[in-house]
Amino acid sequence: MREQLQREAHRHQQPLLAENIPRLWILTPTASQRIITAFSALNNPDWGEGIYFLAPALTTALIVLHQLPETPETLWLRLLGRGGTRTRAIDELEALSPSHPFKSALPKRTQEERKFIMRLAPLYEQDREAAIQQGEAIGLQKEASKLVLRQLKRRFGELPPHITETIQKLSVEKLEDLGEALLDFNIQADLINWLNQT
Image 1 (tube, helix red, strand yellow):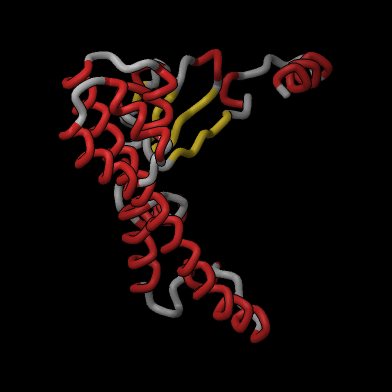
Image 2 (cartoon, rainbow, N blue to C red):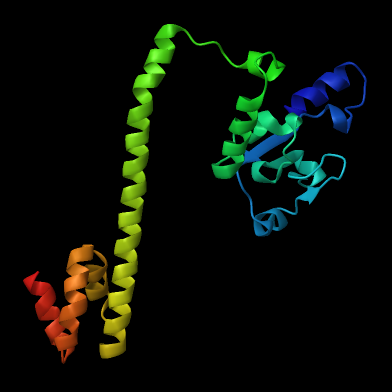
């Protein structure tokens, strides 16, 4: 695009001014200070909080949605955020009067679309709950395997990788059983025998 603008400016015998070069805007729900520093992104006080500019040659800016000030001017952007940022933005939008221009900007839905959304909402919630439960189960399994592996390492020293992998794949119930059984193990062979029996 820059080359095309340069050709156009050259054709019209005009210089291509920096302010006429389109900027790439990257929107991100969150960004740590480490990431911002890694990109050498700088906040321009004229633009306010949450907006960072990369090196001029890159003509790129980063908008960190959770850092934006909670003002009417940033409302539409904050709706793209996550968690509390989005929730507060939705609350702000709902609190606006029905005649507010932001409310009229929302698309009007047909009766059929409203029915469709109402039918999908419970499915979305079920899917969301299932994802949360699955995430919690995976987290619990990982923590349980870490605990058992620490106990085994303390008892027998470093374990061979294939044994470690086998233990990491055990269900939470099996890990609980192993946690009890390892109290009776005297040598690493006892552990291997137990794993072979499961």
